[in-house]
Image: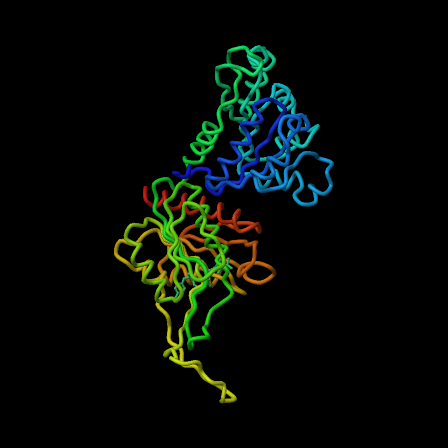
Length: 404
Ligand code: PMT
């Protein structure tokens, strides 16, 4: 199955209203997940008469949201959080009633409130009887919604549940999947090959001990996922982590800095962008003991030697790709990041302050992104959200540089 790259890694809220076409949204949710999207479902009261929330829960892998006043669902993920979480909201099927309520800007149930509260792109897939569809009220509602930026998918023409034939059928799940994919396929990195490093490296001391750090790989993996979502082909050279390889990403697993360097060198020629998010060990033991060391001495000194600076080597190459480094600092963030960017000859650097639940092995991050003549801060958020903003910036700077 070829992945519909545009939806891979996207967070999509599917809104379901009451209509016989609700059965098609079950298939849509299943197909979206198959293609790597993260899906949450919001159902109106009428929708639950046509298809059960349990079905949607099983297919989406998440609890289904049905009511603004459900305190347990609100506690888990409130409607404003859900509105912010979404990369897109697609209402499928969208009944005539829902379209009218959206046009009026009503917020009288969870779904209409969500449509009003989200800044994500809004799609609607209308489904209704042909006379209701062609009614001037519905047509006018759709026109106003489109003027406000709502994207209309369908409806199609054909046999209807009421036995009539005409325009008003909801598009098939596959058509909706492709429409969403196409929307994002216009992402900023379509056709680009991106090489990334992520996670820690481990430098052996003896057969049972090693030098490493607290990197979990979460930041690098999130950036890999965001790059795929932006249309890139992604190779991820990963140190040891407990993470699952994101959909659509080719992963090369390594352990040491030397192995990471070799894997990067093997893929760098085909890459237009190199992003080094790994926390590579700066030193390795000068000699690896063949047998487990005995702890006889009260003190022990280990001679260390520098590891290869993978990023600096890539950035120094004659036909270097667009190079993005990371810098994790406990203090003087901007000063050290600027220094690293200049010293290593980078196009961009993403600096993160570590500590306070940020940076290493945390779910959240915040970044100060610097490039030769600019700077932008990315506010504290889940690493997946931060990663998407970073990829948007990288795509902008990469294209600006290749056209200058
Ligand atoms: O993995 P997580 O738990 O999600 O944490 C994410 C992170 C904090 C590890 C990540 O966001 C991050 O900041 N990574 C870089 C860590 C760092 O401080 O790197 P550095 O200052 O040692 O190196 C600067 C840059 O050179 C980095 O892009 C690094 O990947 C690269 N480097 C460093 C040394 C080396 N031998 N080779 C390299 O390529």
